[in-house]
Length: 476
Image (cartoon, rainbow, N blue to C red; front, side):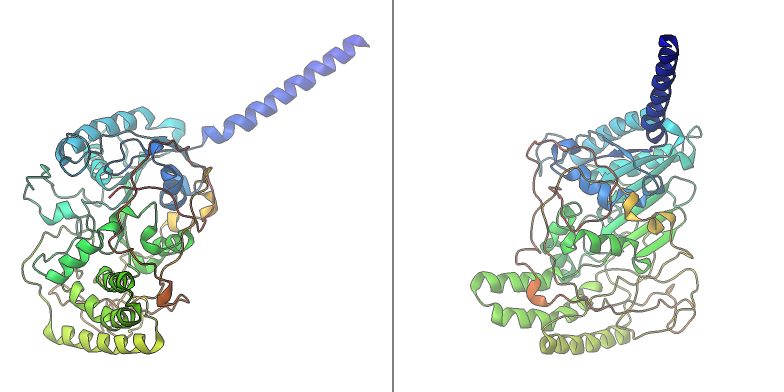
């Protein structure tokens, strides 16, 4: 009998051990790895409170490998220096070159682990590092394109809108970096490129001589540092909805360009902030409501949005705007402004218009409400995945308030290659009304600057669904 009990106990212990090994080893065996880099002034993402968690919740799920299973997050350390504007002695170009070597080391280390694609996340300067690495890997015949996926936010190398690409092929002395044409949209790793409208780094004006467009970009410089903090005024659930909104997405080859419309025009927000500071909000708020639609039309004249975001588009001097179209947009905007004052709210602005390259059968809508035309036939897998399978935060970020959620129409420009109105390829147009009123806008947003890291640690994120909580610092 004792021998029988000993045999039974040994068998039971062996069974429990096998079960434990299976339970603890299977998830890790199928988990993809995500290499996450910080922005300028954030060399070590772990030292930026809440940064890794925010990246996991909001952006990594755009990569299919992280949308269908929990990703193991690895913080990749890069210099992220920009002398003389930020701490450190490296100029931008030297910092990027050094960071490229450090990222490549991590990529070679983790590439092919567990048989899952490797995900690379870049923000601001590190998006440039990631762009250079993508170009390098695309030229390496030993690296399969489907073994990597890239997610970029605030990318200075975005072909149409990136600050660095606007000045190609000119070397900017203080930057000391010569941008080349961005990587081809086909043949390389799948990429998601996300930008807020009017981000100074990734949505820089095409026509710098447009003083209003330049002033709007400078006033709204804080937009660039808000991807993991205030999200340009969006709550996290709203931001995820905007990222996955087909109207805001444009697919070119293997790259999905996401352009998120700004909620409040920085120029108009500056008027409201000034009134709040001087105690004149009763006067400045209706004035801002009145002129914001018109200002949007004039600011948009500083952009060439009739070509796709994947097309290399350097700066120009004189916009090819159709005077008839501009006058029509201004008349429509004036009416919108009057209605805003009467309603004490503003209409939600449509995404920047881009001519569709794939004809659609969408019905026409009023010309003042143009959509960002998508080049996609179906929503990409990452957009269809539920956010419950994205990364889950172990830290509890601060709760963000919401801003005015109503948009105003963006204007358009005529272009020889643009799709003529009324044709099957003419972009569809929409208007969506939100519940928040103008009084919900918090003063100080337009010119806000990002927080700086305080040296505290942050743990890697784990899978979770969206939350309405903000995350910590992200430098500009």
